[in-house]
Length: 479
Image (tube, rainbow, N blue to C red; front, side, top):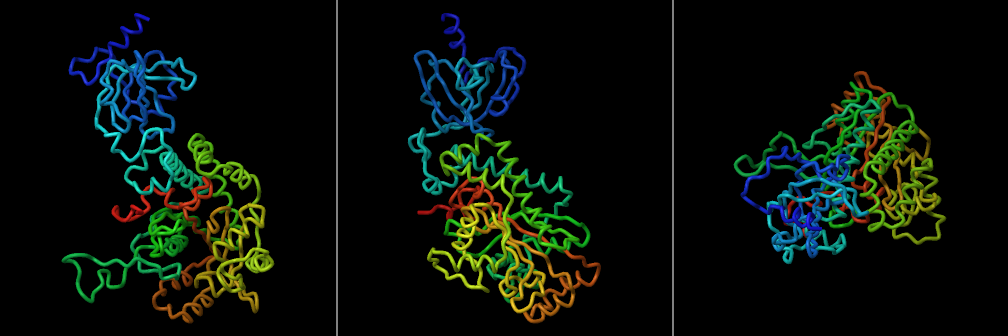
């Protein structure tokens, strides 16, 4: 015991005295320190934020986290330190020996030799409280601090892993990554929900457009991907998109991320649906494999039962029904809908969720929508009076529509007639040109990335799966 006391009392706290002439401390992340195999007193340095402080008679225990993992690294220090300065939320740099922990709760711990406070934190005034499990609604009031909590930290690590998994899937499948423009003159969705751009200050000239035409923030990279699909058989993009719609609801964001792909020489919706299903499952499996603790936290505290629901989705083949079949199912439902289901009308979120439930909570593809409710570029099925197009949506439990896509109209005269009827021939002359010079059957799809995260984690509000849910800081705070 005397030897232990002497060791603990040798800890230096913000001391200006020279550090012992040991081998320089290796800087490790908390994640790497926790996974270290060599625990025979290796000297390391970690930097992070204090998550807990616990003082015993002769030992001071700290838990430090740097965001690299859900688990924090336990620090053992001399209790004689002035622990009043070591508070929850403070940033620190700690050097010491990484040793095997006698506790069953962790494999290793760091015996501190030097602790340096980088930034103090007034724990009483800090809105994130020690040992409190704050509701997500509360955390939305503090978007500049919520990333410091376990739950948002887990979600953001999962988001990072899912991003890498998506890129890995497309790379392994032979797709070329394309950076599509954020500033554009096109509304590929045809919904008109765009943010228009204008120069500010001295650059602004009345009655003139900076680009000689009105410019907007992009709602989709699809049309630009179609350009690229004339040179590359498989392309994808993954970037921010913008919609000027009600972002106050739990389902909508003004700025969000879209995963979009375009594939040449595709002749059937089945080909597209196969890629969509593989993308969904491969990404989810990689996230589950690489972030098990983070996913478990979300499934345990945010959405109990979501683990089983996700496994159910992953082990079953996705179902396929036509839009016409979907409308008939809705009409025969005993449930009273706010919006009455009718053929020729867009499906509402309540309809989509009912259809997924009706299909056993397995993701379901809805195919062959009415031509009148889909954009001009969807391929005409030429199926008589109903007149549908080769469009497809993937509906998933808890979210509704996750993917949307379809075959593109590659036939020049069909597309020319559609554009002429809509008065868009001049605007989309370049799009017609694509059909004149080496056109091929092709199709593609888009996936809302935040909705995907909601689906696999069971998060109810879309604002909780994106780092910054509002464009302007002052507008983030929901009072």
